[in-house]
Length: 439
Image (cartoon, rainbow, N blue to C red; front, side, top):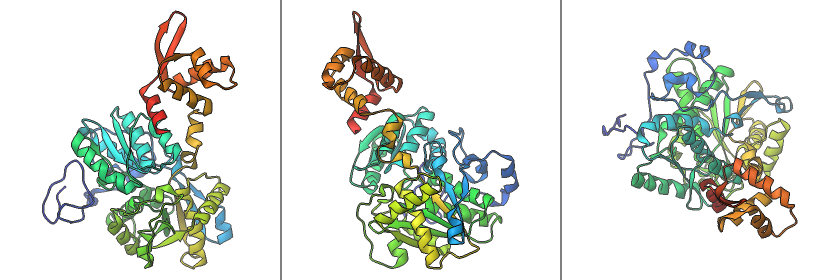
C-alpha cells in the first residue's frame, strides 16, 4: 500500500503509521463486497475473505465463529447482555484471529521465521500458527507472563526471549531482532496486517445481534481498534447504519487510554491483569479516536473488582483470565451510571481463557512436581532410570519413574540418548531444555 501523504510504499509489514507520521490503514474495494455470500460459507475468520488481505496459502486452525451466549445477568440488570466467548478459539484467545491472517500473509516474507512481542496470548497464538506453517517462531516476552501461556509457547516449539518489565520494552527489542535476523514481525503495534483478522469479530456480532454496545478489555487497544475498523467497514459497504458504542475497560493501576477518555490523571503500575499491563500503547491515538467516534467511553476497575468479575463470569459458565474478567464489573458500573439502559444489546468480549493463567497450563501438559524435578536432573547430563530415582531423593516408587519417563517422552520433553547394555540413558530434547530454562 501507499502512504496517502508522502507516497511511500509498504509491501510486507504495514505499520500503524508511516515514517512521515501519516496514519496507515488497509483498505479494500468496498463497492464489490456482497455480504449475502458470507451466509453460504462456514463460520470463521476466512468467511469474510473479501475484507481480508489476499494470501497465497491460508494457515488456519478453524479460528473465529466463537459462541455468543445470552448472559443470565441480563435478568438481574434488566438489559440484554451477551458474552462473546473468544476463549473457544484454538489456543484459547482472540489472538488466533490475528495469527491466521498475519502468518498466512507473512509466509512469503518469513524466510527465517516469525517474531512477535507479546505479554502472552499473541505469543501463544503465533507459536501455534508458526508450527502449523512449519516455520520457526521467536517470541519476545516481558519478565512476568502467565505460566499457562508460557507452557503453550514451549509446547508449540517457540524460541523464547525474555526482555523488559512490560510488553512496551519487548516491542522495541523484537523490532530490532526482526531487522537483524530477517524475521517477519507480526507484533500488532508494528504490523497492522493481523488486525484485519481481529476485526472479523465485528462482522460476526453484526450477523448475530447487531449490538448497541461492545465492552472490550483494553491493554494495547489493538482489539478495540480492530472491532472499530470492522464496524466502520460494515458502514462503508452499506450493511450497517450506526456504529455501536465501544467501551474500553482498564484497571485503576494501569490506564493510559481510559484516563485520557475520562480526563483524569493516569496510572501505569503493574496489575494482576497482566494482559492489560501496557504502559505506553503505541496505538493509543487510533484507539481514542475509535472510542470517541463511536460515542463510547472508558471504565476503570479495581484489583478487587477484577476477582469479582472472574466469579461472575464463572457463574455464567465461562472461565476467563483476569484480563478478561474486567468486563463484568465494567458492565455493572455502566448500568448503574445509566450509560446502558433497557432495550440496549450489550456484548461483553471475553478475550482469553482462565486455563492460560496461573498453574493451569502446567497441569494441562502434565508437568507436575516430580516430572519437573526429573527434567532438572537431566539438565545436568544423561542418566538412566535408576540414577534418576536415586537423584530424586524422595519417597517415590522406582516403578513410577518409568511411567514418568514414558509420559515425558510422549510430551516430547526427553528422548533416548544411548544404550549401554540393558540400561537406557535419557536426555532433554530442545523443547525440554526450553521448558526448564523458562520455569
